[in-house]
Amino acid sequence: MKKVVGGLTVAALLVTACGDENGNEEETVTEEDTYEETTDNEESEGAEGQGGDEDEDLADDDQDLHDETDEEEELEEESETEVTHQMASDHTVQPLDGNNSEQVVLLTIDDAPADHGLEMAQTLAELDAGAIFFVNGHFLQSEDAKDQLRGIHELGFEIGNHTMNHPNMSHLTEEEQYAEIIELNELVEEIIGERPRFYRAPFGVNTDYSKQLIEEEGMQWMNWTYGYDYEADYMEADPLAEIMVETELLRNGANLLMHDRSFTSEALEDIVNGLREKGYEPIDPEKIE
Image 1 (cartoon, rainbow, N blue to C red):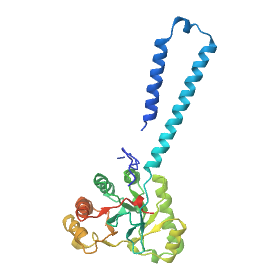
Image 2 (image 1 turned 60 degrees about the horizontal axis):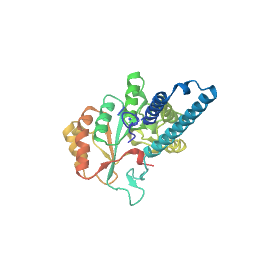
Image 3 (image 1 turned 180 degrees about the vertical axis):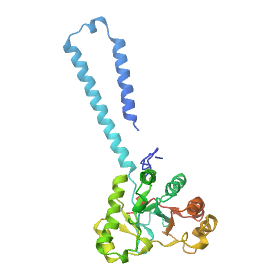
Image 4 (image 1 turned 135 degrees about the vertical axis):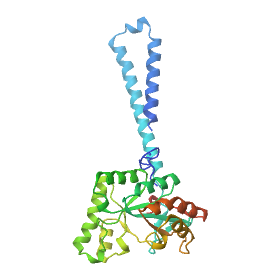
């Protein structure tokens, strides 16, 4: 999960400028030492002598800037998340090699940000659990909703494409399907500065054209392996938390479908804790190639 480590980028709200601070401190010490060691004779020296000191100070400043740049580049390299898993054809998450854990699950939140998306992101961030928030364009028409999306992204969560208006794509023309996907990509990029790289079709209905379009966009489409918060029996927090953890469908790499809903938000902490008690770790989507 992209942590704006410290507050922002996590990234980002929850995501150092040590170099400048240290550099300033060193310059202050140098200036004070030079001032204390200055004698009357030194003060009366000509411009040539003063120029030599300035050149030396400038060289020191250039070296400080060079060191700071190197440190920043090293930090950027260290902050890059290692890719360890991939999406399989059955929509599960599988390790790229034997060194990576099989006991992971992918948490996904659809229909965001409706009413509880940011709240769910905050819960997951506190639990250090990654997730993809699949958003709809019709929820992103107000400034408040756009701010919520920025907040979810700044907490470090992946933003996925769930179409502009949540239609059944098989009922649309190719032109209409194009608009549903591409317009949302552009809207999300306008809001958070990044285009989605994952796509989930409403109702899990993909078409040959939508798959082709997703491939052309350099994205991945996925459905899910199980979900329950759209069934009447599980529209309360306790039964939902229980079934999400106790279902026989839970397995290595499971792709868990949830939605931006009040009872799902309420159940989220118990779901994550229950999965971990069974040995399953929610994967950071950034680790998925």
